[in-house]
Image (cartoon, rainbow, N blue to C red):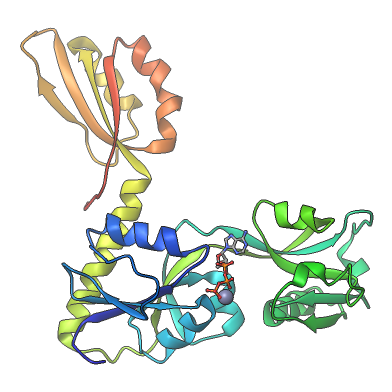
Length: 289
Ligand code: ATP
Ligand code: ZN
């Protein structure tokens, strides 16, 4: 369907779907929430959202059926598709790990030598073992990898883990990390794109970038004694120079600044010691620097 709209391939249902649609919303894109349709069109942006199984996303992007895709880096690398990572998106964090039966131990990587390891990530595991100079037998399974050891078809498994609850339920425990993953925005390596679409692509990319930056930042506001201004400005890890506003009370000033969220609790005591009052921290939806 060629209608000039930008196309983005996303997971239809599953662990990445909700966060992906949340991100599009933060970009100001209004999308009908209907996971039964293959394609939904945004109401206020020339964008078609292709709702797919995550395994198919790299290929759709590689073949330029979609201009962008959002997929786990684990799937992208496993499929070895010709795609470029535009940016990491900070959600869908997980690890591809070796896991072993609860009552066994695996201390050194060399102990994998000659073992049977079940996985649906054959390529990533093969690469890992090759780099470590280990010869092991890879048993490729398309799903339910976590039951392979109890069925006796493998000694260990290699699967995606985040909290470890699924492993525990299957009487397995975490061992070596094979690959660290998170959701990524991808594009095709083929740069052959018409001008109109290129503009849309750059626009969406800017919106995503701005939404991600905003997630990591907060808007700090406070009143300070005028005499503390210099010391307080030094304390603020502001992305840009803070805004200083005068107040009716000539001895006080208001200070506003965008700061990295994680720094707030490190500076709040020092701000109070310098006489700051009415300290407010507010979320930000978008930032264009
Ligand atoms: P699909 O039907 O789209 O093929 P799926 O069952 O293959 O779905 P999900 O389980 O929804 O996939 O996981 C999608 C992606 O989410 C994974 O490839 C991985 O990048 C990421 N992820 C994050 N945490 C986890 C986790 N605990 N288990 C599995 N995947 C996770
Ligand atoms: Zn899948």
